[in-house]
Image 1: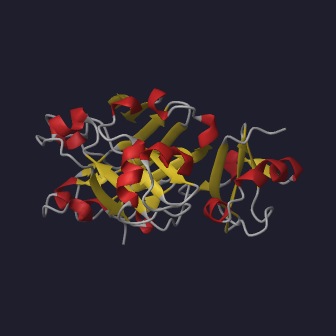
Image 2: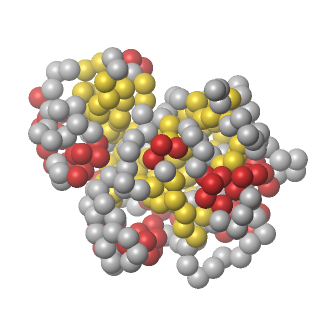
Image 3: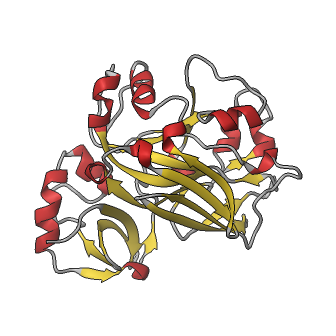
Length: 287
């Protein structure tokens, strides 16, 4: 029997697909379950229960390094992000914690995968890191009770919600600084929710060129995951494959003295214990 705790989205031989990560190999599950050509499609048809049997029957395997990694969910219906969700980050920004979570959104086309370059745009050199944990939805729903919210989660991944800080501050609505191409790194894979009994026991760390820049426990979230899931669901139903990016802790680059921004040639890592390490280089945008 194979260990199915990790599911990965990839591109290989100019074809996109998904599979289970077993050691240093990928078991290619693309098309092995009727109607499932991606992790999102697998979740939409509620076929996670068929993954084990399919993976044990499939003989098509290849080395994990023999593919390009895509964002875990390359094209979700929505990516909902939570701002100011760790007390130390609230304090370093000089703001106050409000009664409700700060919600903003990312577009799917702003994402990039593990091992790919996060792009510093032509118009700014204020590219900042934001290590976070992402939640992937397996079951949709509206008006979800917090007590039942965790039942809607299919799995977890690492996310680097890299931000263009000067563009973020152009207006009070800072969504533009969050939606530059190839700035939302998402990976390296999805760890299924059954492998994580309590997300609050996980730890998050962001490293820039090997130096620890952010470190926190997921227990330190100001608004916990069930609260945010429920809050958003009162306005807009969650759908299978949707992504919730849960917030970044203190230690961001633009609040350091002097400020620290990512530049070409840098390597940034976001690690969430029990989930994995998301690694990206930094490269300048080219026309």
